[in-house]
Length: 208
Ligand SMILES: [Zn+2]
Image 1 (cartoon, helix red, strand yellow):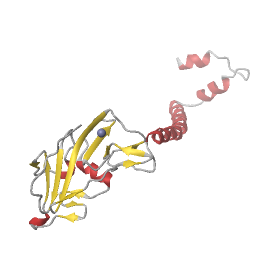
Image 2 (spheres, protein in one colour; image 1 turned 120 degrees about the horizontal axis):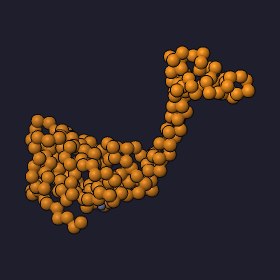
Image 3 (spheres, helix red, strand yellow; image 1 turned 90 degrees about the vertical axis):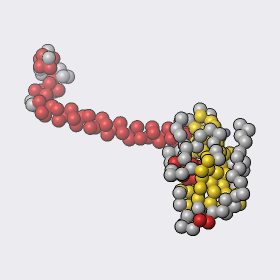
């Protein structure tokens, strides 16, 4: 088919295809394949810088470049309401309530992370475009505070009982789990206790 196609054009300088047909006729199959590989490479080379530019434009619309993606969570220019739910966090350090501040994950006027707090109620808002399970460790990372099974803030766990670190979920102490991996689900009441516990583990009444 290829040969027939070439032969159907008359040879000679008058035909604009003659240069191409002579070129191919003088090449063997391997040469021709190399030639097409070169063209393909050149095409990819021309496409790649353009597509990287496109990706940059796309992310610039969605994300404020000033604030990094943290644990896969973007800081977006507007709130998402595809998935919107609330959990509550209380922290006790040596028997005293530790205020969870408002504005965690909110960077006015630029952007808002999918995990954030609007006020000092301890309510964590999850407002996400994706139905991914977000975790307690991600919240602390967005807050910019240390938290794992052996540390909260700068309070570290050692062998003494007055440095114990416990996490309660809906009133029940959580055992044998990475605290950072605790999933944040709707109307979950999370209480973190470091050192001497409060006289009573409170429970939170959700209004919304
Ligand atoms: Zn909310």
